[in-house]
Length: 433
Length: 71
Image 1 (cartoon, rainbow over the protein chains, first blue to last red):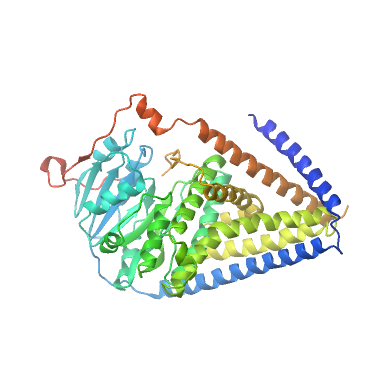
Image 2: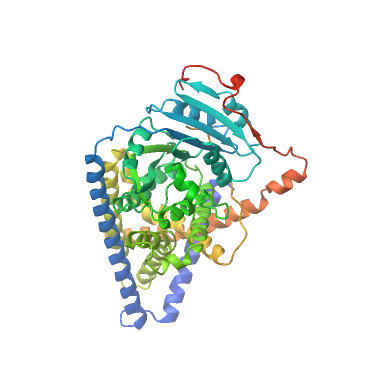
C-alpha cells in the first residue's frame, strides 16, 4: 500500500477512535466528581510514582556500577577463551563478523563457527576463512538445522577452553571486548559476564530509536542489575561463560524462544553471580523495518515468558537469595507488567483528557514523561560515551516507539497465555556490519 | 485556542494514531507470517537435507597459516 494511503487510513482510524472514545466517556458519565474519575486519578498517580521510582533506582544503581566497574584494574590474567559463533543464513554479514573477531586484542583465544544448516553460502564463506592465525585457530563446522540453542551447545561441546564467549553470527565485537570481560572472572563466584550490545546500523528512524533503546532501556537496566551481580539476561550477541558452569547447568535448552534468558536464569538459580561489562561491546544489526522489530520483540516476549514459566516456583519465593529473587521479579516486571502499565497508563490519561476533565493536561503529562526520558537518555549516553545525536529521539521515544513495541508485547503475552503456536522467525539482514 | 490546549490536542491525536498504527502493524506482521512458507513445507518440496559434518581442527589440509585479514 502507498504511504499516503497508509497515512489517510491511519488518520481516519484515529478520528473514528477519538469519536468512539468520546462517546464511551459521555455514556459512562465520566466527570470530576465520579468514582471512575477518582479511580483514574489514583491509577495515574501510581503509574507516575512507579515510573519515577524505577528511573531513580535504575540511574542510581547504574551510576554505582559505573564507578565500581571503572575503578578496577586488569587482573593481568588472560585465560584461554573459545568464541562460539552460531550462524544460520548469515552470508550478508559472516565475513566481516569473523574478520573482526580475528582482530580482537586478546592473546589467547580460538574461534568455532557452528553453521546450523544454512541454506545460503554461509558455510562456504566461513570455511574459506578457516585456519590458524597466530595463536588463534578458526574452525568451522556444520550440522543439521536444529536452532540457535542446539548450535551453541555444539560449540560448547567442541570448545577446549575453560571459558567460552557465545555470540550471534550477525554481531561484531569491539577489539577490547575479551580483555574487559575476562577480568571479572578473577572473582570465582562470577559464572557469566553480560556484554554491552549496540546498534550498528543507525540509518533510519527505527534503527536510531532502537539504538537509543539499547542504551537507555536495556543497558541502563543491565547496568543496575550488574551492581547487584544478578543480571537476568546475558544477551545473545555477547555473553562470556565459565564452560564448566555451562556444562553443569546442562547448556542451552531448546524449549524456549529466548535461549539467552533461559540460560541466564539457569545460571542465576544455580547460585552463580552474573555481572555486566559495558566496555565488552557487541555491535549488532537491528531490524530496519517496523514489522521486523515487532517480529523480534514478539519472540523475545514469548521466549522470556517461556523461560519464566519454567521457574514459576522461583518467582514466589526468595530461596536463591534476595538478589536472584529480585532479578527474576524484575524480568517479569520489565517484560510483562511494565509494557502493559505503560500502554494502559497513557490510554487512561488520554481518556481523562478526552472526557474534558483536564483537556490541557495531556501536554503537561507528555512534557513530564518526556523530560524524564530526555534526562535518562542524557545520563545513559554520557555514561556510555555515545553520540549525543541520539538524545533528541527521546522526545518521541515513549509515546511513539515504546508504545508501538509495548502493544506488540501485550499481544505476544496474550498469545503465550493461550499457547498460540509460533516459529523462530529469522530476521532478514541488510549486511551493514 | 491556547497553546497548551493546541499542543495537547496534537499529542492526543498523535498518541491515538500511534496506538492504531501499533495494532495495525501487529496485524500486518501476523498476516505476513501466516503467508510465509514454513521450513517443513520447503523440505517437502525437495530441498537438500543437511548432514552433520565436522571439520577436524588438526587435519593439516584445513589449517592454513596466514596473517589476519583486514576488513
